[in-house]
Image: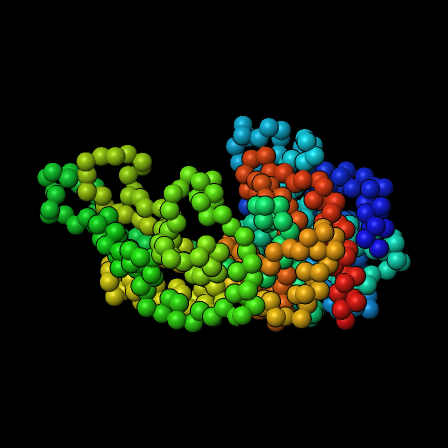
Amino acid sequence: MIKQLRDWVSARDLDGELADWISQPSVSRTGEGMAEAAAHGLRLLRASGLQAREVETGGWPALVGTADGPGPHVLIYGHYDVQPAGPLKLWTTPPFVPSIRAGRMYGRGTGDNKGQHLAHLLGLRALRDLTGGFPCRVTVLLDGEEEIGSPNLATAVRQVGQPDLVIWSDGPVHESGRECVVLGVRGILMFELRARGASRPLHSGNWGGVAPNPAWALVQLLATMRSADGTVTVAGFADDVAPLTDGQRAALDDFPVDVAKTLEAIGAVVLEPPAWLGFRKRLTMPTLTVNSLSCEDSGDHRAVIPDVAVARCEARLVGGQTPDQVADAIQRHVARYAPDVEFTPGAAMAPSTTLPETPYTATIVQAVEDVNGQRPLLIPSLGGSLPMAVLSDGLSCPCYGVPLANADEANHAADENLDLDRFHRGIVAAATIQLALAAHS
């Protein structure tokens, strides 16, 4: 069957379909092309044999396609919105004019996420053409707001029924080129700390040692939140973190990484404290990060005592934590150590965890291996954040990530691209996973 799927892919101009999809802007942050993209997405769903509809969410609509089949109910999640193009001068070719160079298609959305969810749609179309139907009951959910934090995804999820499992394809494979099956994502809570001093900036000579300096107040507050060895010292921050299971630890032990080479690639010489912590385990643990420190001085460096100092920060969350719980812990900490500093929570996503011990894990891993000829890496958690908790927690079902993009896809950056060989193999893998899940049942 895998050979038949490969032959089906090679006999069709599927790269042209991808190019047409990339040609349609769909920038949720600005609204550019969103209505037209929704119409295009519905046509793609229908072309793959699905009953398609647009779901109003209160924001940009979600697109839902459904089809019956004898196997388990599989929800395929993707998103049709993309990041803004950014500075056009950084692109070799225009972001919404797809270009193929050295076996890759360049354009905004190629890897994130149009090429990846299109591979799933084409995999379904191949199964329909080759077998006359679908091996599993399928629901495809294309989010229109992932790039702005999926604020209304829960509204759409309530209208898709109860699946047995979720499959999503986003992000890249391992930097070595080896395929991955991802079992979770960290959550995120963004927040701002704002300290105020006098009513205006003041001459640092005339007022030094007299006027309160909000920058020092902010630095001293931050120093109470994390120790020099990297331990977060906010009471209640990580009290409920779930311990790793045997399966998660085994997956971490199997994960290959050359720490020295990885550090060299980013121009660093040491890991962030604590020094004893293993590289991969770091991405399964919560973090507290200062993203920027500034004073409201228009970028000038003047000999003044600033009137306002701002720290923009984030916490990455893991299983057992929730954004509300972590926000409460930080707010209590600020109230204790610096009650005059303003704490303002921002965008947030909950973490999502699927355990390796979940019954479908081995089936999906084997299907990916059958297509690619090597066993994929099993990754307990991505370091980054995606809105998977809306699905894993909201629907109480396991979620599996099967990234299909190359490691250097440059998602969110100029010259975003997708290796077309990976795109083609992704179509075969998507279809093979459906067949394997049906056999599993």
